[in-house]
Length: 215
Image (cartoon, rainbow, N blue to C red; front, side):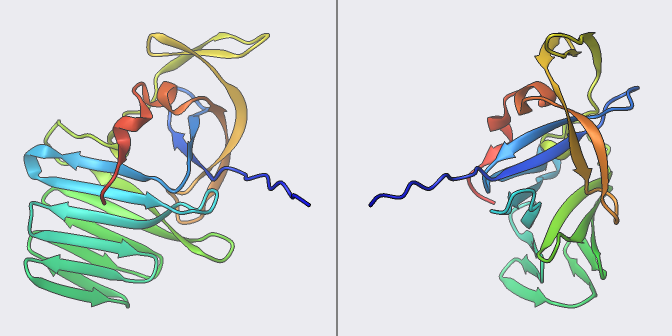
């Protein structure tokens, strides 16, 4: 006897706020992929994240690299700092300094600062397992940022309601459907309406440009 198993794809829904619109865009990313969150070439600063293998499980690990010598790995349970040849593990609330990087671990969030860049990584209890969600609080003054967190707010207008709803995002039309998305950028997640479209349409560039192989 043969039994067929239907595999449900692991999806992670992302929110992209819209400029001068009340309803944001949203898009799905499939699988436990690794994403480029932030990259400032002139600062030799990069932030990468690995999505969990559970649907809407957020990030399981986030890596911060400054130049070639300072590396911070943030897990749901601990922080690992590599400063040159020195490796230190932290499991409790603490203030950690590694070269130009300062990490402050609190109960439900982790503050990261280097130069004039400020980021908070919120730790959510997602019906049991913890998840990480990065929020960029202050961009560096350099205007050459890349990555998912550097994407500007969407600019769109509604051009068709039936038979298929269409939005013009910048200069390109995209099919959308009304869905729900959870905004994890708050300490208490907020569920809201969104226009679901493809990742390429929402980001206005191919998703593969944000996918990386190494954290």
